[in-house]
Image (cartoon, rainbow, N blue to C red; front, side):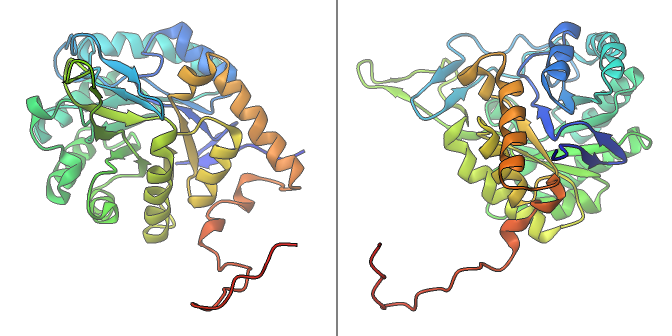
Length: 326
């Protein structure tokens, strides 16, 4: 039987699937449900320095090729989040499923402060969300858009929580994601998450107005997968020894296979829950296992990064006729 275990920052996970931040909040029952469903790790909803109500409805729309959302980082604030995280820990530890706390803030100093507060709950990892695209008007340019700013945030968190491994969540809409990746790894990031949602907008042709109350939001779902794959591919090529959580458009087990082939160590699952219901994680895990068995692949390491190998086919010279199909 093929193995689905994955080594990540000193932990042996029983599955490469990770519940993405914001999908099922931070309640004990839902995070534990994700663990029982087949996630090797779960990410809590991002929290910041203060409580935020988020944006008014409509905040999420299925536009036909994916989702677009502008939830607006709704959260109870770091102090309240600590109790939620601490309550979830026993249930997750009983399942041997690590907890990833996710944080955001408006300045590098605030990131450090939020990390220190959240660390009181002793999460296994902390994810630094420097790339949320739907609060631009409130926070200005995302930290993920600037290598210097991204490094400053990473350094602040590293100083605040020297004993907890940190993961930096990157944005897809930058000229060179490896430049940002290089900066945060040099500043102390232990792993990368690629990627957050892609900024976009949908307009109602009848009213002539953007559908989201926030006007713009972040694209996720199937339309994001090719972008996420390219980002994971580029990051793995640049930093082959840095673990990556590949996130974006993973809806099936085959999607997860492709993300691992691009170089991902783990695979984030988010909007699949919308498309396939609460049993999506169980289904994706089963499909991933079936793919490995069907292709006689012993473990995930055998396919990780294989997209970087030299192609086995013979290229057709430019201008040469393409052989007819038989």
